[in-house]
Amino acid sequence: MESRQIAPRFVRIADATQMYSLSRATFDRALAGGDLTRYKRGSAVLLEVAELDAWIRGERETHLE
Image 1 (tube, one colour):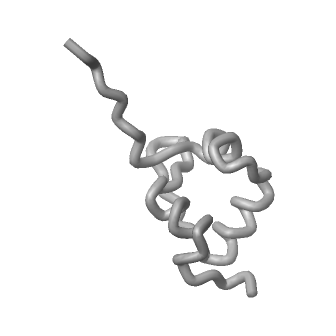
Image 2 (spheres, rainbow, N blue to C red):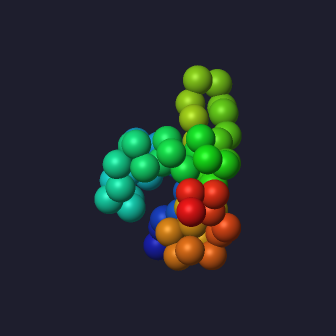
């Protein structure tokens, strides 16, 4: 039986920095500016992968401009 990898729906900021090769400060600015949504699960701060992908592609309206 073949096992499938399921892509995560949410990731921690530290994981997002590695996935997208961007600094923590870049994500902090986007969060502070309202360009990304922060989700909390206990003490963990999570970002939604689909929203990150749209933000990276420029399909999400930014407030940094």
